[in-house]
Length: 111
Image (cartoon, rainbow, N blue to C red; front, top):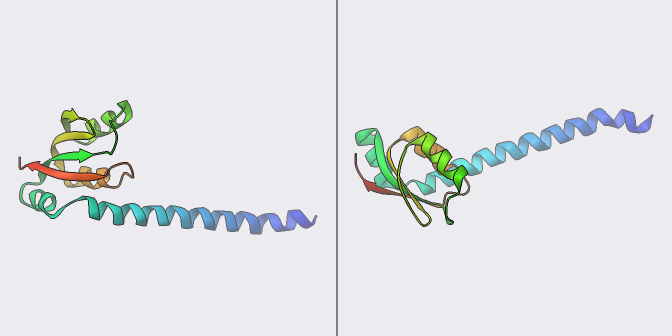
């Protein structure tokens, strides 16, 4: 009977812990995304609404990564760790920058 009385408290603590972890993850990815989008990419987005970028993963992309990028923008090339995207909008680049496996985003040329 003693363990059954503690069950709601344990469930509450576990729920609070999981929510705190998820909130921390969202904050961390938002802060990390800010550092991955350089000022010239932000300026191209402000000026044109889209940007052509190169995204570095730190490893050669696999099928999952290619599918992910194809859903976000037009993939025009892959060279080693770099994936080249055309016409990526601000929402797509923000989503891309939030991925923990994305290391760097660089402007290629304005559309």
